[in-house]
Length: 208
Image 1 (tube, rainbow, N blue to C red):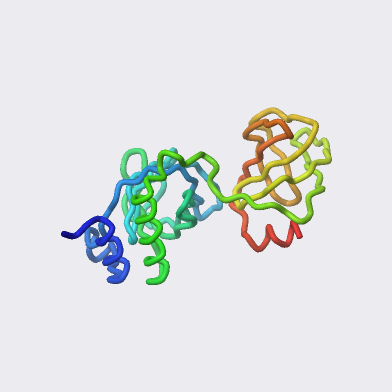
Image 2 (cartoon, one colour):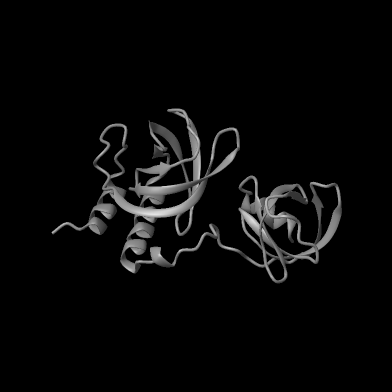
């Protein structure tokens, strides 16, 4: 009997393109919160509805255009690049631009998610955080005030900062050249979400 897991692996090896046969890739229903970036580098929250190794259906708060290039990021999956092949009310379907190796990796990730039933334990923190070598920094608030802070951890989508001041949630700031906004307060300081997804190499240069 062919299972969803077997189908994922088989389609990853076949590498069929959705444009030629949209259902050769087995879709599985997985709900994950994430964000996507448009070609103009504007970033928006989104929710994954279903996915295969060839494409995905995504709920979006904004309307996109068919053919538009999209980069989406989801917990436990990472970055997915492709183009919009269909627009529907409240979202869009995208076709991935990827290699056979990436398809195999994605199939393994999806199988792990389904087998381990991790969806109930997924939090809204979207990318894995890591400690940094250079922790002492300053932030420029949208009021024009400069404040000393200590970077507790950082990811490509945000950072946790230790600081005495608690700027209002939703207010903007600059951490170096990275634009962000305050999304939460915690015991040590604030949680910041970057406006743009950062390149991992740029983060390494900034914090080493």
